[in-house]
Length: 282
Ligand code: NDP
Image (tube, rainbow, N blue to C red; front, side, top):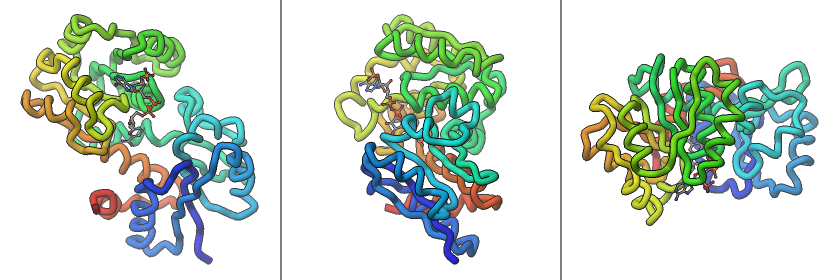
């Protein structure tokens, strides 16, 4: 019988996960199908309750459900609890368990790009869900210091106070949002992670953010990462390239968060090339 996997979101029609996972199932000859489920917030509890009775084998969870799903699960892995977001569900001993594959997805994508994360000095821009996943992922991968800067300083402070214990032994700190503070901080940064939604769709906010960041202060060997993947070459990455910095776009994180979920569900090594090609397709 065909196994059913899927993604719960609202809206969910834009998701590229069905193409990525279905191509992986077909490449490995697995009799399974991955389906998008548009679930409005008020129906999330009923949707979650139906996963086991319908024998759905594994699910992804996307906006706006990543946080609200937590109290509906039997168990949540510690890093997902610290991040405050679950993006992958699996069944273990008849219990519905939530995990966050965004955090290890980011670090696997950076290692895949040839970066060394051990002892890295990191700066994360933004204080939302993607920033929280980045902090935990990079702390687990051995970053020594992670500075967080956000346009609303109190949000950066909240992130740091909530994640400091989980991120140890990495040291978390808040950096100011003013240009002078950015310049000071970037001088001592090996890896800059753009984790805001400002660069999405290359609008005026994207240009303003690129303008506000003194990327020329980064050391020569620093790498600039933008988690946004639409467009792939964001204004921040363009600026970094103009300054001859190594850059990594957000498609790799999307790919590897999916690969980690796939491996959890199927117990098989994810066919990365096939999954990447599915994401690259127009
Ligand atoms: P959230 O809404 O949780 O957080 C967005 C963050 O961006 C907030 O800190 C927000 O600040 C900040 N922000 C928004 N606009 C601006 C601006 N103009 N200038 C400065 N800061 C701004 O979103 P997520 O953290 O979930 O996602 C952020 C981005 O990361 C998304 O656009 C998404 O595409 C990308 N992403 C990519 C993934 C991947 O697999 N590659 C996975 C997850 C996310 P404030 O609170 O002040 O509004």
